[in-house]
Length: 196
Image 1 (cartoon, rainbow, N blue to C red):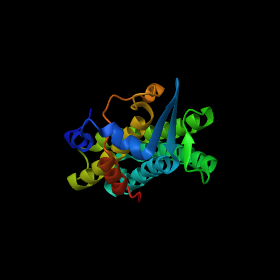
Image 2 (image 1 turned 30 degrees about the vertical axis):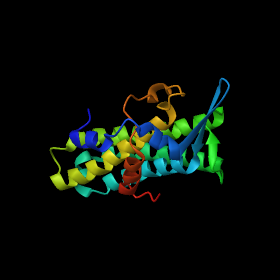
Image 3 (image 1 turned 60 degrees about the vertical axis):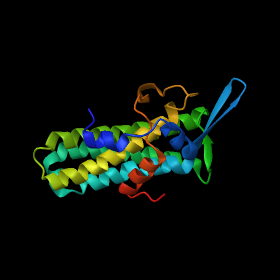
Image 4 (image 1 turned 30 degrees about the horizontal axis):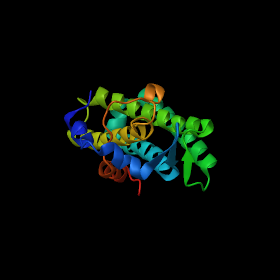
C-alpha cells in the first residue's frame, strides 16, 4: 500500500502518459503494425537511478544496521542483478540512440532491466517498512525520499512499456498506476543523483 507521501509524489493529470512517452519513446503505426521505439538514454537513466537508490538507502548507517545483514545481502543481490542487466543492455546498445522494443532481443534486455529495477524497489520497500519503528525519523524520511523517487522511476518505466494505449501489458509488470509526469520523473532522477 502506498503511503500519502508516495501518492502525492505520483499524483498528476490525465496527460501524464503522454508526457513520459514524448521523451522516452515514440509509437508509430503502419497499417496493423505498431512499433515502439525507446530512448536508450532513458533506459540507462532509469537503471542507474535504481543503483543509486540502493547506495543512498544503504549509506544510512542506522537504517542499514536496523535492516540487518541478511536483508542487506538480499538488497545487494538485487542491486547486482540490476547492475548486470543494465550493463548487458548498455553493452548491446553501444552508441545507439534508440531501439525498437518490438525486437525480441531488445525486448528481453529491456524487460530484464525493468524486472531487476522492480525487484530492487520491492526489496528496499520491504526492508524500510520492516524497520520504520526502529529508525530515527530523519533517517527514515531520507530513506523514504529515495524510495519514493525510485517508485516514480519504476512507474515511469512500466508506463513506458505498457500504458501507451497501443501496447499490450508486459506480463507481471503490468500496472494500473497512472504514469508520473515528465517533471516528476526528472525530479525523481535528480533525487537519485542521475543528471538529465
